[in-house]
Image (cartoon, rainbow, N blue to C red; front, side):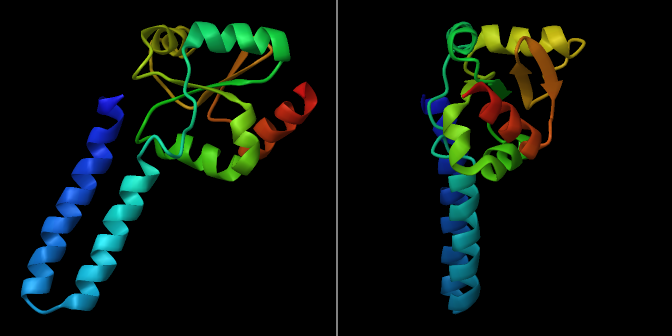
Amino acid sequence: MTRAWILPILLVLCGSVVATGLIRSENLAAAAVLLLVFVLLAGVNSPLIFLRSIGALEAQSRSAVDGRPVVFWRPGCTYCLRLRIRLGRSARQLHWVDIWRDPAGAAAVRAVNEGNETVPTVIVAGQPYVNPDPSWVREQLSRSV
């Protein structure tokens, strides 16, 4: 759990240091904007955006029961972030697997991507789709529910 917070904490600390330097040089507006950018970057890269990450085996068994897609992702992936944001509230209905936390998830992604850990990889009804369009994922989710 602490590994997931390292990048957001470092972003806030770096932003604070740079903003402090700007404040000392009496550039308050630039310091405020820069600090806000770093805090937003920290928020986007934090576990707060991707709630309820579970293990691959649990996600696959839940998907077999309820038919909802499984999304394999990793922190810092802009495509994963795009998918999560564009799905909006419906993203909470998906089963999210962080491949950096779950070795079985990373192995599952490598198995369908010729040995690469390409994310987001979405599994729908046993079929893998790499970096699918968010509207397509939303459509698949509405079919399963």
